[in-house]
Length: 168
Ligand SMILES: [Zn+2]
Ligand SMILES: [Zn+2]
Image (cartoon, rainbow, N blue to C red; front, side):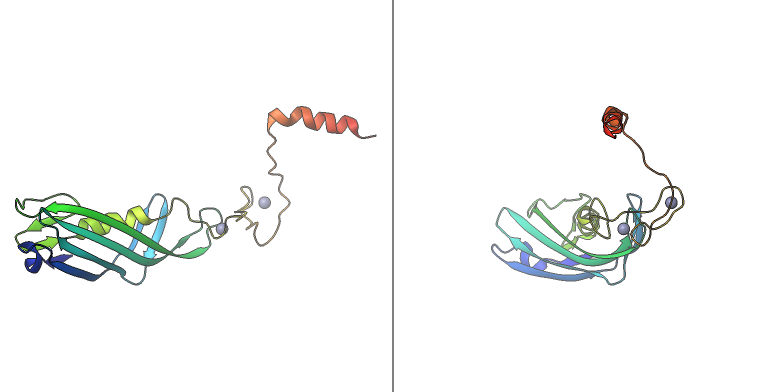
């Protein structure tokens, strides 16, 4: 994703607004699959602050994925921000985030990393999703099954014993 920054590169205080769309598509990340049907929106600003060019980016996108517990479809919105100063004079920036080549700034790396970094650690259809039965696969949000999946914590065995003895 390339931006011509000729209008800001040599004049102090000059600003340039960024408004772009980035097609992300479908990808796998951290064990889940994400689909961005619509392109993500990239907005931001490049400002010449004398000693450097200050780049501020904001990303907003909508994706569908799967609940980590029950596997149902979920739809979420992501939001991310990035800010970086790149030096204006000695313009030999070639980081993974931004590449400046003459008057052409490539922000593809920054946008891609923003997509990943703005994804949540977990995708759940709801915080109290019950997930699937580990034995029969029943969706426990929708129905119950008769499997015995109770796993007792041995540390509590004594309490069960006490409770049992208490029964008259
Ligand atoms: Zn779920
Ligand atoms: Zn079951």
